[in-house]
Image 1 (cartoon, rainbow, N blue to C red):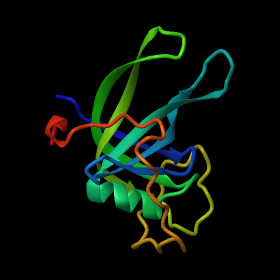
Image 2: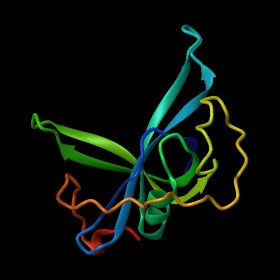
Image 3: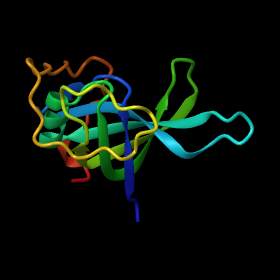
Image 4: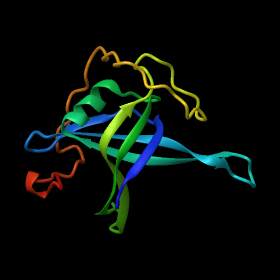
Length: 150
């Protein structure tokens, strides 16, 4: 079973794009604090995860999320390999979101890094301007609809 549940804060604003056939895709990353501090340094350790949302979920994330917002992400881990600029082969892990729950209000200040008990807010207010879709040629790998797992 490949299931992931994460709660964290966005590290940057979401990036909206679309496939060559017009399917919306949204990429963002979240910072998730570990439950325990490092025993040797006393520092809070944080992991960073890349999130990918598709279709209507992508549009909602692009419209309502922004850097610092707290979210709960439910999805699965997906691996991909690519060739780096130096020619070496590398692997990356992404979380493909099935659900994204907005845990902080759109106009609220970012939650503190140790705050795990945020209440679910009522329907968030939309931002003044929805982000535009980026062109497919801006470093995004094109995928045929037939290759999508859903």
